[in-house]
Image (cartoon, rainbow, N blue to C red; front, side, top):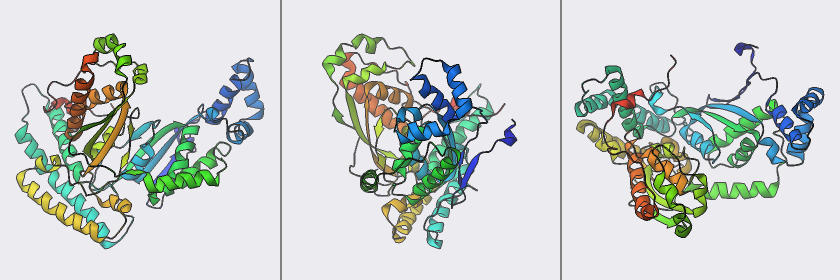
Length: 450
């Protein structure tokens, strides 16, 4: 079977994007794979015998009866699928990825041509379009001046390759100017998951406050029922639906706090138990994770302000629990996005911000919908909870010179608190000695076909 002959199932979105269930061309698809594994749990006849049953009876009735009908959810864990969702806002991407077991990829803002990229505009008025285009114009017009400004600050050093240096400068410029991109800017994501997790996540997202999210889920459901009708025909229960709708609509977004500085909010770590693992904490080598069982010692919770652009990065850490912030102008634009501009463009940015905030307010739309027109550089309260194994991994990875400066700063602050609280019990962190330094190796962090 050739690539061209594969039959992917595609459903178009109203805004021009689409959702797609990938056809891998496998003879044994996800449902059949799940069936074989389920049979394996109830019979010692061996996999060859199960394959014979599959060949004779197929997997459709089995999945409809045992996975959906009888509610044996673990069977759904055994079949994986890959979904591609394109032309959606940053807000939809974050909603889908707000899941502990999400696996997949999203288009990076560093590699998107925003001169052509669609901006999602749910209001659809002249005024709303003007807000989006004002953000776009500033982003595009400021790009070259910002690159030149960076070259004046960080000149190419002897022995550095020009092509890598130029890429590093461009990456830094993208990191600065992404703060002026609206969350309505469209993006693409891939979602690789087992069937159970897709169904469980969709059960919540169909009640999401954003209409765009609800439309994506409806199209996904249509496509999945078309490809796997036996595995995505779950009965809906009114009490469950009402419960999920109530908390999704009323409590999904985190808007409750304002943190003037990075703060330790809660520490439930059992230090007596942790002290028994002191030798493990003390002897951990560089680039090595702590054992997962350290989680039994308890959790730590931090609160801090972080711009939405960098929240997109820290949200990738699924081992910790984070609330989804509501993107708003209430807490102001993160100062980094102003300080990093040349003086002339800083003045222009300040004028733009004032005008944009007024125009967003004049749209007279709900705070949820206003997110589309709000730039990703605005600060938001963030609350994060995790065990020591998960948090140590997070801070060591994010407190380096290769990470966006606003996230790198917060990761460093959390690392300092962790060392203060748990250093006496043997915790040692392997941190970047000079996290603020401009490193040309940033230009090597790319994925290209050879």
